[in-house]
Length: 129
Image (cartoon, rainbow, N blue to C red):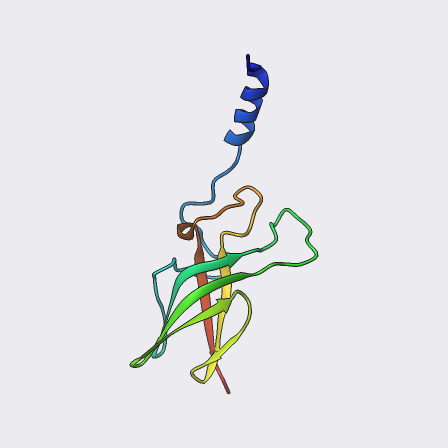
C-alpha cells in the first residue's frame, strides 16, 4: 500500500512550478522569436535554433555565467550564411558588429527546461566607424 500523504506532497510540489511566460519580452526593446527576422540595412537576421542554454539561473550565484548559443541565418544582399552566435559576444560582419544583446526569458530555476518556442531574442548592429 502506497502512503497517500507523501504522494500528495510530491504532486503539490510539482504543481507549484511556474511555467515560462507565453510571450517573453525583452527589457531593452522588441524581441523576435525563432524563425522571425530583424532587419539591419541590407542584412536580415533570423534566429533558427537554440543550440545550448547553460545560463546561470537569476536566483543563483554561479562561478560561471554560462552561455546561450543560437544557430542564426544571416541574409546579406544575395548571400545567405548560417552562423552560431553566443549571447552577449560581438560578431563582426558586413562592416560592423552584430550582437545577440538580450535573451528572454531570463534563466530561472522555476523553468529549468525551456522549449525552443519559449525563447525570444533582441539583436543589435553597430556599423564600424
